[in-house]
Image 1 (tube, rainbow, N blue to C red):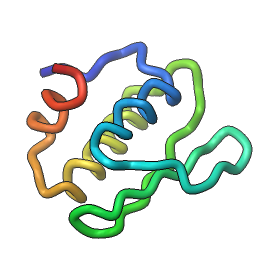
Image 2 (cartoon, rainbow, N blue to C red; image 1 turned 180 degrees about the horizontal axis):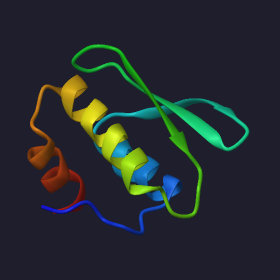
Image 3 (cartoon, rainbow, N blue to C red; image 1 turned 90 degrees about the horizontal axis):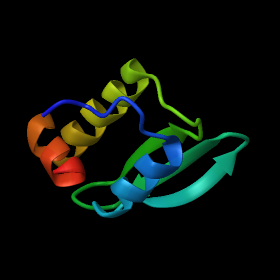
Image 4 (cartoon, rainbow, N blue to C red; image 1 turned 45 degrees about the horizontal axis):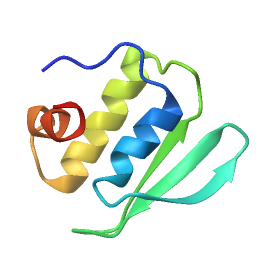
Amino acid sequence: MRIPRDLSGAELISLLSKLGYRQTRQAGSHVRLTCDDPSQHHVTIPLHDSLRIGTLSAILNDVAAAQSIERDVLLERLFG
């Protein structure tokens, strides 16, 4: 599955909340999300209208590694 090219930071935050991530703080235009399952993991999401593909890819790789799943499985859960 391909990564969406027009995803905003707010939309990504909403999608990650399905996986148990919650907002723990915000500094300017960046939001920090935390997930406690299976282990505590933090990820920072920029609140931009359209995330750059490299930024989005890095965030998704980090989340997939923290959730101990493959990136394609994560993409299917979020966008499928």
